[in-house]
Image (tube, rainbow, N blue to C red; front, side, top):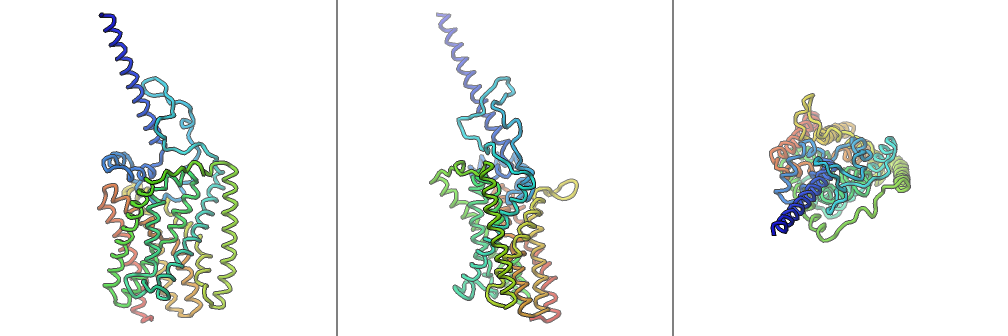
Length: 437
């Protein structure tokens, strides 16, 4: 009887030990999977979890990761290198001294080993994707201006708080909720280049902060201060609601379907080279066509001159914004203070707004039809792509969701106020003193 009892106790002990080892194995795999995720992906994943789990996960993420949620610029080329050696191991040795397989019962949130383009070619691929999707963003924004503007639906204009670029800012913010937050990890499983192209290239160029700021300056310079203030408050409220609706609708859609991104990964040498050549061909075709038509239409002052000139100068604007985004999350000075503040996006928006205000003054001073078309084309393409609302509002949304509503308010208010005050000094003061019309 004693032997039987002893055997039962040993059996229970063994079962308990196996259960403990299994739990440690699962915890180890979860820890490994989280360590492989980028900080920004961990933030995106946490947003889609319950509030309690979200707070726990976000507590482990450095505040700089939140500043990089919209874009980390060309640092992505260095950060997304090949997998580390320890990630390629077939086994993981735990601290307790036993070995477990890294293949879990639960899926690991990592990318499989894939072909990586050489560093310089990889950087070139990002620039190509940014340009191609930037073209598409500018073209969509131009069409929305015409559709909702005075010539057709007459819902937006330069004379009311409902400025011409409001529809494109609403659409871009909504899409950012889908592809820049909820489905961004899935997009990254397909292709990093495609992800940057869609989020930074297309949605960043579809929306424009500098155009929004300039329309408010036009209103204030004419004495319509209440319209200008209403346009700023209404504008920030609408785009914030747009990204919230985008996230919630994307989450609802995600529950209905199971998107298998691994089936369409661009992860082999052939696929990478083929996709790169296709996008390069598209870039060259659009750029050459835009250059030819821009010269012809600007010279003849015919319809479409602003659009084609805008497309011609759009890529440098996207590249500058992407490059400045490398400053997001690095903080100020040697002590790296305020790492949560997206300084790259802030500089892109404020600088583009100031340059647009300067060009608007020049346009009024020169006051010829051809100069107006040229400067409007630069504003539509280069400056419209250099500034962004979609990334700006995504960063605000993430700060709010992470429990930092005060920081979100400081970031939003500082961007809007700096741009408007500097724009007033650059544009409105000369208009008032020189009596430009």
